[in-house]
Length: 119
Length: 119
DNA sequence: CAGAATCCATTCGGATACTG
DNA sequence: CAGTATCCGAATGGATTCTG
Image (cartoon, rainbow over all chains, first blue to last red; front, side):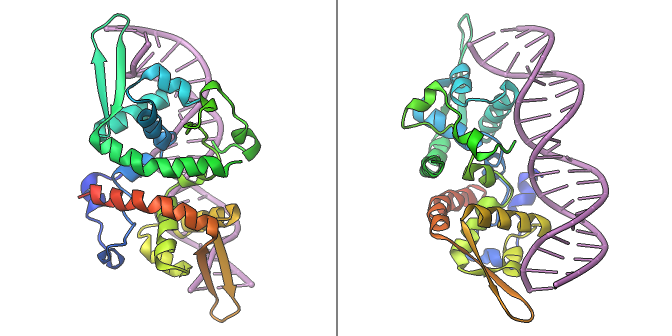
């Protein structure tokens, strides 16, 4: 399902000539389709630099392996920055990169609205 | 993974007392996490009432079974309206419900931005 | 045309156990 | 504390076939 960036970004078809083409599936969208992904960005955007444990508590229900995966994916893509402190016990903080903040700005209205829909 | 609405909407934990809780995973978010879901809403929002075949062409790469599933899910949840015409050959058009338009408004900034990120 | 049904490979994510 | 590694069932989605 996950295409490499070259392949997915060069997919061309007639309907993509217009400026209103939402067809692309690759890139960020691929990661955003995974569980807890959108919430993760918004949580970090809301509480600022956040520690692993805090995020784990906030995203009620995530398994450590899933959270770990999501975190790595976003770091890899440049949406999260990982700060590691040389302390004992170890402390790590995740925060949004500028790109991550842009993403968060577009995610917040969605999630906030989605939450209200649930009632 | 898909919880029933009761279960997912009654999940309560301490960090959800604040107005900035994005934890809920159920409801629309569940469907939005599926492939082509966000694009589907935006495509219909952009080209207006759209036929099955047109959507299939626009969402380059979807299988008919997947598109069919996504369409049904959104109709079921009240985000899409399905108009069937008594013609031969049969014609069906999908369009956003008011709820669907609200969703679309929050999705468009995201997808538009995501598309630009790919270059 | 618009889709439902079936089959199946792949992916995903939870549980559990284990480290630096 | 902050993960990683492994195992494994469940969910997802593509391909294909068929139909009103």
